[in-house]
Image (cartoon, rainbow, N blue to C red; front, side):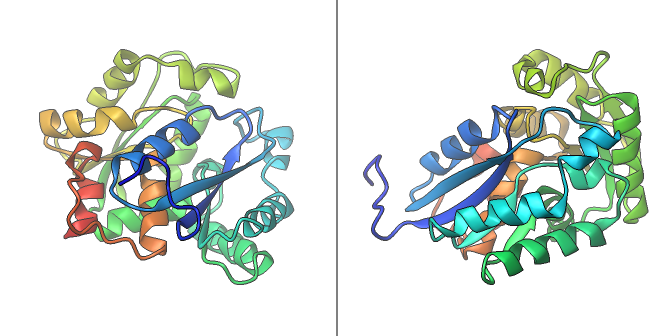
Length: 257
């Protein structure tokens, strides 16, 4: 297959990305380039400079911001649109809020199917029949606890919530974490009771570590960048048949099962 997609027939998945995120586009594009498929990512951005629950941070995630972004992606004739961010996990809402957001985006986009990283993460855990999890994040103690409360509130058993000793700031600095720094946090989250580790930040580039750490730890790892693309692929009907998806971990491998 040509390195350049056939733009006449390519299926397109649209992603709404935080403006200070520097990980999503590179990793999403790399995964798609590794597949023998004519699928391309289309990106648009919304202004996100801080990650928190204060009034300024919360204002970045108002529904009208997402609906406007979704409308922009319809101009490129995307077949599915996803918010590639984890705000639904730390804003203090339940899963229904993200369902409502996805519906509002879809309505604004003329009925195009829409989802979010939060919805994708829960869908992945249900797909894999996993309820016992741990969490690995680069967040502050407050945000880490919010993520813990979100999954506990959705009736998952959270056995550990591990964070970096020092949270990188501002948000764009999170993407500059080294593989060793990310691996240290993920390994600390590998407690015996957990069946999956949730790496819940789309600016934390842990996707490339997933397969090796899954093999080492014998645990499923669901990282936010990977799971958002995984859900997008499912939304456009990609089933992974004939592909070797092992390099991207168990979740991607499950597409072909």
